[in-house]
Image (cartoon, rainbow, N blue to C red; front, top):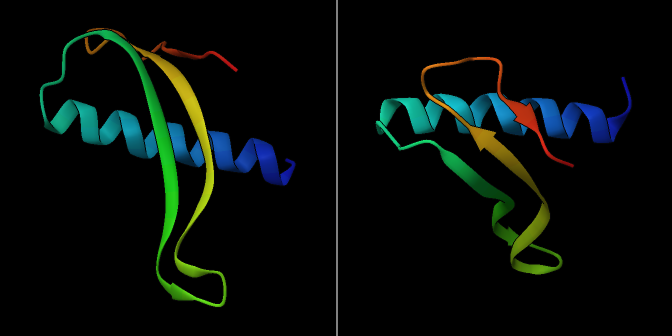
Length: 65
């Protein structure tokens, strides 16, 4: 698994867990990931983002790029 594939997979699983706990409605969501805290690059570093099609009644959601 590449680093990018791992990022997408891990981000998606975490996002789906969060959306389920918040009883979020179905829809397309953009999930942005930041490294927080002070780093040599400043106070926060954007790591990337993904878009997911979330449907709480089906765990067969697909990542859309």
